[in-house]
Image (tube, rainbow, N blue to C red; front, side):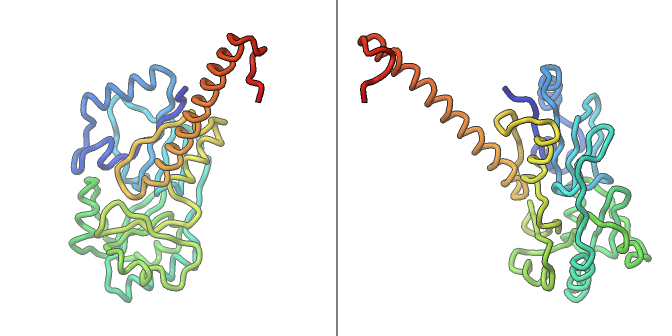
Length: 252
């Protein structure tokens, strides 16, 4: 029985560039909630970029690709970027002459802009706030760094870091997060908090940053289906054996 459902935002709950749920999607979410299924938002966005959905209140919100997890009334997991890695990445990006965006629970700011980063923000209808005191703001705990970047540049962006990785759902910009985060880890943290099994969860997503979340739950669902099939097969075989007068089991 499904007890919790995880949903990505961009490209899943919302079409790219849209801010409102379709009536069909809203009806589905409300039906799940009315049937006792917990709703979890699992997004690469930060708190400042979350959309407000009329009539829908999510039970759990996973932001920053899993670096921060909150229920309606408490934080159940948080993991900001390693401080040394954070400053190293910011320097790497400055050396690459890239605009840099940083985010935590309270802010989403940049030190500038470029075409790809601006488009990245536009996908989520998020405004870009360029600040002059960017270097000072960087001293705060930061959960995610965003920048324009293509796959062949990943190594350069992460040069000199130990505890950080790149996740992406678009091929021209990335989210930079702690290594031990990601949506797959977030699913595990949420399930542990509610004492749910993976077989009691389902997930929906469309981007590369959703893969580990989806794979984890698909594998659990597959294993559960195989277990149920084995049990059903054993029951049939026992009935057949009993019908042959073999005492409810095969003699080998």
